Length: 418
Image (cartoon, rainbow, N blue to C red; front, side, top):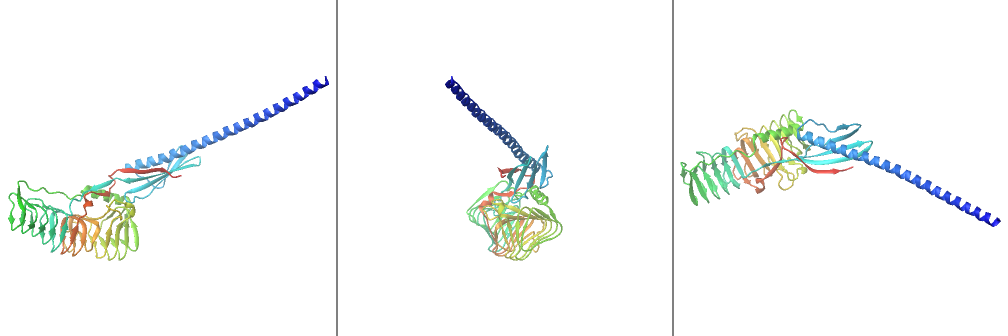
């Protein structure tokens, strides 16, 4: 009997120990599960708040894109509030037709930040000719040269050379005293030396012209408008004005970045000054440069081209550098809407080489002085002094300018940055 009681006692103690261990393990497991559950709930809640922050940031981006697309008023920075949460949006100024939008969503202090890079769709301008003129025609000095094709709605005359084809549109217009390396299309011809075919309109006259062969055209040669419309010029002006306005004259010394901006007076670029264009510039007065100054596009333009517009006259003095962004296909266009046809005060007065620029005078004369070399000139009238050269770049057949507010915007990059 004593032995039996001892065994029972030992068995009871073992059972009690087992129950204690099981209970302890159960409590530990329960506590662990509770902790894991609470942690999962906390993590899930944090994830929910983080997701809310992301979509808040995304909403800020989309709201801003919509406003920009529809030309609505928008400030930077600005805050978009949704319920108890918000997102803060910042927009950079346009550089080279591109902007960056950042949007920082905040839901219960959970931060998500998105960035979008978008650019304005570029306006394609086709400069098919090394030189193109309106009804004012082209006057070429001794040994002046256009290395490329030429189109004019007025007479072409002088003692210069056109290396490729020359087209003179309109009834009664003529080519006179010019040497042409390829074909000529004209109403009349006088004292011209033509290596190719002379195509002239029936009713026109031929006086002492040499040519390889001749063809009579039954219909007059149709005139062509200049490649940039008045509407597009006004769009560029509006784009510049949207960036702000400087009242009166503006003088640049040292290094200065500028644009988009409208200047109501003259723009004066002083000796040794460097003007870096970061957006379209519209000058209601004259643009005056001085020796050793530089006008260039910001590197962020990349392969896009940019424009500076003057309602007055543009004077490019000796040793003034004008160029694009530095990438192939990027050009700076200097455009004057002045109607001056006076060679003593022309719409655009060029006194220095400018291989990285395009010159455009929609209503006036472009005067190229002695011994200068440019890539392209288009105007109501062109005048080339002795030894002046227009050396056409084939890439100008398809050149892209950042467009005005009438253009659309395209998202280039959409990413989470925080």
